[in-house]
Image (tube, rainbow, N blue to C red; front, side, top):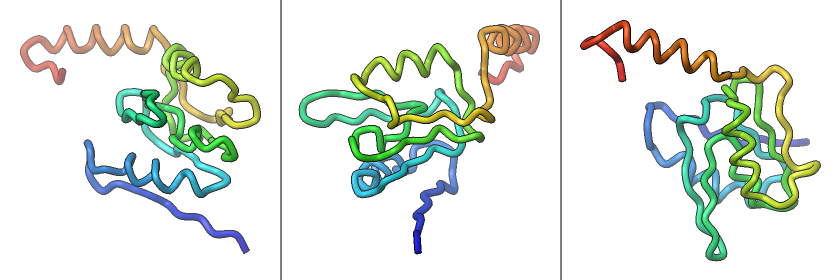
Length: 124
């Protein structure tokens, strides 16, 4: 029988989920990120090296774990490539769902234009 543990936050913002996942991920065979985008994340310092993770699951620091970016994650390809560049060998250790949502440069331009149109009622 296989078991799974799930860490879910009940608030938006920094609630400490990342720290718990960082600790637990070292003991698991598979670590998955199931939602969110590159606008969140956290920094991990291990063996004197700093890693900034926004899309890649923190299980990536466990060389024996398979890491999955799931279909509920919003992926900016440029940000993902930048994040992947922090690591030497991801082959067979990082998987991206073919159903993950893509955010492309034109999406960001549309969002910025809509914000400008809101004027002093912009969300920010």
